[in-house]
Amino acid sequence: MKRLAFCAAAAFALSVAPACAAHWRVDYAKSRLGFTVQWSGEAFSAQFRHWDADIDFDPADVAHARVAVTVDLASEASDEPDFDSGLKGAQGFETSRFPTARFVVKTITAKPGNGYVANGTLNIRGISRDVALPFSLTMSGDTAHMVGTAHVLRTDFAVGQGEWAAPTPVSHDVTVTVDLTATK
Image (cartoon, rainbow, N blue to C red; front, side):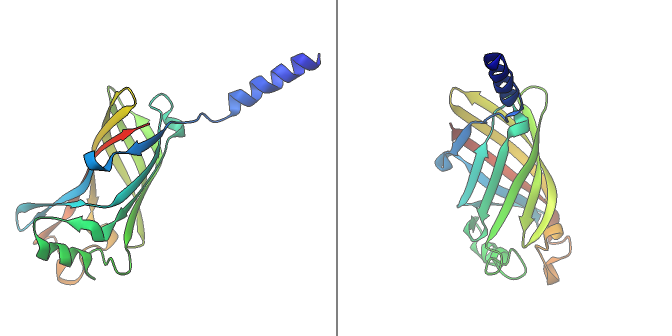
């Protein structure tokens, strides 16, 4: 009888215990995080050279996924150094007061094929907004490759103040791009 009670208790404990998602290590040499915005009618693109992603993910168990990304905003770089200094200044990211941006995933939803949507909270300049990041994921052995884009309004995060608050010359709509390779 004791053995039966123990087996029942063990089975119950295993059935309610959360699954352990695989922890992924980002290959930063093969990964890119950046954005594109229309500036004076032309695409302006930049990358963040320093960022960190903490990822626990199992495509068979997205309910237990855990993802947090921290971006060093001062590491923004483009082919336009004058624009970069303005973006980091008081009317842009204001990196002296707000050195990082953070995206924390709340849920991931699987879509047909290799598609997913990560829904989370993006915090820039101390302002948090919900953001959806649709992405595709391909896996080969212990390597995963994720590509996604999210659309945000820079003014939702007070990026672009004063003369830069208008939708011209810099569009309010910003496309965030992620191209990430990781191994478990």
